[in-house]
Amino acid sequence: MTRKTILHMLTPLRQMSPFDVNMALDAGYDAVVPYTDVGLSDVGNLVQDAIFSRPPDAGVATGIFLAGKDAPTALDMLDAARKAMVPPFEISVFADPAGSFTTAAAMVAKVEKALARHYDRTLADVSVAIFGATGVVGYCTAVIAAKEGARVTIVGHDGLRRVEDIASSIKERFGVTVTPADGSDDAKKGAAIEGANVLLAAAKAGVQVISSAQLRNAPDLLVAADVNAVPPAGIEGLKVNANGEPLEGTRAIGIGPLSIGNVKYKTQSGLFVRMLKAEKPIILDFQDAFSLARDLAK
Ligand SMILES: NC(=O)c1ccc[n+]([C@@H]2O[C@H](COP(=O)([O-])OP(=O)(O)OC[C@H]3O[C@@H](n4cnc5c(N)ncnc54)[C@H](OP(=O)(O)O)[C@@H]3O)[C@@H](O)[C@H]2O)c1
Image 1 (cartoon, rainbow, N blue to C red):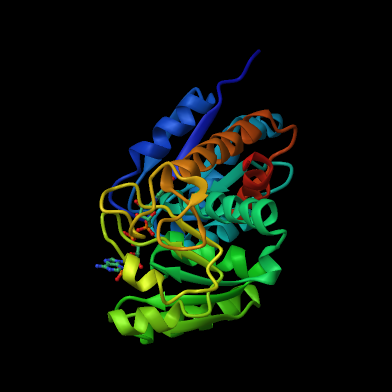
Image 2 (image 1 turned 180 degrees about the vertical axis):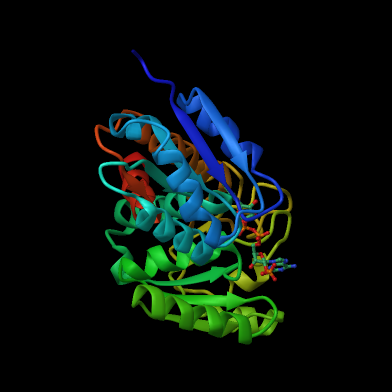
């Protein structure tokens, strides 16, 4: 008998993302079921409800997807799901809150490729300034880049306090250091990018965070990348489909949101397919997203 593949999609928010629902069905799940307003303490019960309703060999045909808008919460839910398994009753789990794990993975993978191709440099050789760092994509971008050895600065649009807290939580959870910086006015933003080799914009859709004038404060800039596809661009002058072309008014190259989105889409879809094809239940987080994005990025 061919078993139906079922994905239980859990979010702490009021709504499950239609983007993620479409991605899961298009990747091949027979059924996807959203659960909203899910708290951390609900995860264990939901996982055990799912694992005991099917025989152990159906574990690979049953999946949990963790959504939401916060990376630490999604990772805590992932841990709770892992702990709720009762071998041999186990199922696959994939976390990608607000698409952030796959988006951050795609952005860092594209930048890594560009550094290697255009400058013969690695992430470990560069300093990286991240705007939109209090958002879920910015947070995950900072963690992935820092784990690869980059010197990472996270820039707060409303002052130092929140980015200081985020830097401490990243240190505690992942053991890597990122430096907080105040980007609450134009002069402070300019100072924050002064020594940057890589500029990553992960700010709210439709918000320009860096102007052409500010780019002149970053003479060592090699690569600028932006994930915001809604005009105006997060980095002025960076085209949505830029894929390594020169960024006007600088000596750097640009990578735009559609080039990053192409890798993000394939990464998220590829991880769903990996769950569907796995011979044993698997657990996927941003590290798995980054490793697949690296293979996909050109
Ligand atoms: N290309 C792709 O494939 C792809 C995929 C997914 C997402 N995205 C894009 O990735 C970006 C980040 O997503 P997200 O979910 O992390 O977004 P988000 O939650 O909306 O916020 C991102 C960041 O922008 C900051 N921000 C808000 N208003 C700002 C302003 N006026 N000036 C400067 N910064 C401001 C937020 O600060 P607060 O913490 O104060 O709100 C936060 O740090 C969005 O542009 C989204 O559209 C792209």
